[in-house]
Image (cartoon, rainbow, N blue to C red; front, side, top):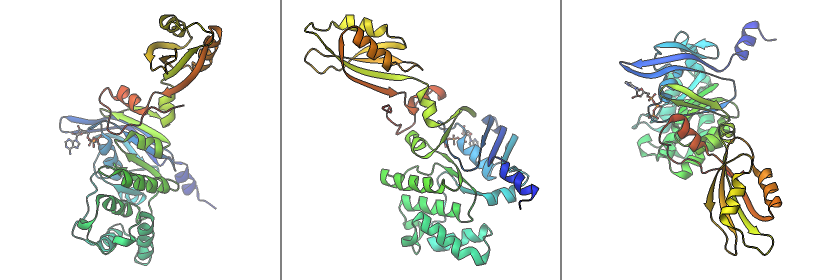
Length: 338
Ligand SMILES: Nc1ncnc2c1ncn2[C@@H]1O[C@H](COP(=O)(O)OP(=O)(O)OP(=O)(O)O)[C@@H](O)[C@H]1O
C-alpha cells in the first residue's frame, strides 16, 4: 500500500514554475515565468534567441539560482532540495559539453560514478543507456573522434544513465544534419513514452512532430501555452479555389471576386493560379470560422463549377512570428493542408 507521502508525490506536477525571474546584472532574462508540466508530458520550449529558454532550464537543473519565484520538480524546490531534485533530472545542456579526450565507455562510467549510480547497478545502467542511444559501435572511441550526431547520442546517454523521471534537453538537435535530426527525434519520442520531457528548439516542425504541448517564451515571459495544433487552427488561414463556368458563359473575374468577398467568414480575396480553359483561381483568407461550406453553397447559387478547394491553416511559424514579434527561426514547417 502507498504511504501518504508517496500519494502526495505522485499527485504533484513534475514541474511547477511560478513567477520565476532571473537577472544577470542589469539584464532581465526572466520576467515572471509560470507554468506546470504534469507527469509524462513532452513539452516543446520555443522562443527567439535570448528569450530565456536556457536560463529556465538551467534553473530547473540546479545550475543557476533564480532571482525570485518558485521552481519545483516533483513538489520539491530545486534550490532547497537540489540534491534530491538533481537525481530526478537528466539534463542535456546547450552545446553538449563533453570530455573530448575520454573514451565513450570511460566517460559513461565516470558520469555513472558522479551521479551516484550504485556500483552493482552500474554496468546494467550503462548497457541500457548505450542500447537506447545506439552507442555500442563507438564505446571504444575517444569522444573527439565522434560525429556530431554520435556526440549528441552520448549527451543523451549521460542524461538518462541514472534513469531520471524528467529529461531537460536544451536544443538536442542543434547542428545535426537532417538524418541525424530524425534519429535523435525518434530517440526523444521513444524516451517520452516513459519520461516527462521538456526540450528547447529553434526548429518549429520539431515541436509538431515530437511534442504534445508547446510553450512559447519571448523576452522572459510565456506568451503561448497550448497543443501545437491548437496554436494554429484557431488562427485561420487560406482557402485556395479554382472555379470554372458551368454553362457556356465565361466567368468575369471581378464579378466572381465580388461574390467570393461576400461569403460569410471571408476576410480577403486575392487572385491565384488558374488552370486555363476559362478557369479562375483565388486565395481566400479567413479567420476562426471554417468557410468551406459557405463557399460551396455560394458556388452552387452562382452557377460556378468548383474544380478545386484546398484549406491551409496558418503555420506554427506564422503564429510564432506573431507572438514573438520578430523573425521566425530556421526550418519552420510549411502551412499544413487540412
Ligand atoms: N551568464 C549570463 N550573463 C549575462 N547575461 C546572460 C547570461 N546568460 C544569459 N544571459 C542573457 O539572458 C537572456 C536570456 O538568455 P538565454 O540563454 O536564457 O536565452 P535562450 O532563449 O536560451 O536563447 P538561445 O535560443 O539563443 O539559446 C539573454 O539576453 C542573454 O544574453
